[in-house]
Image (cartoon, rainbow, N blue to C red; front, side, top):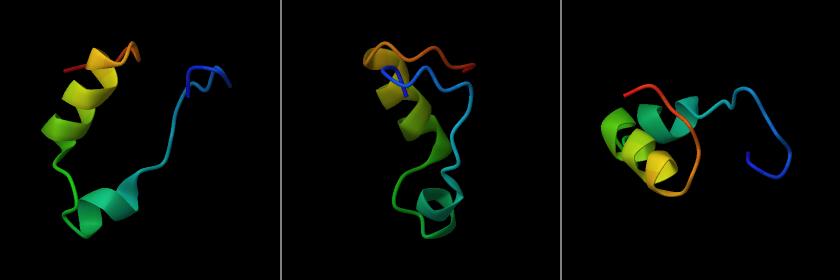
Length: 38
């Protein structure tokens, strides 16, 4: 995401199969320097 300078990413399957919550995913991305809306 960061190196490729993506504006968006598709992550539906990790939410559909409840591997991670949306909140967990956003917190992880934010803590790793990816700007997200919380």
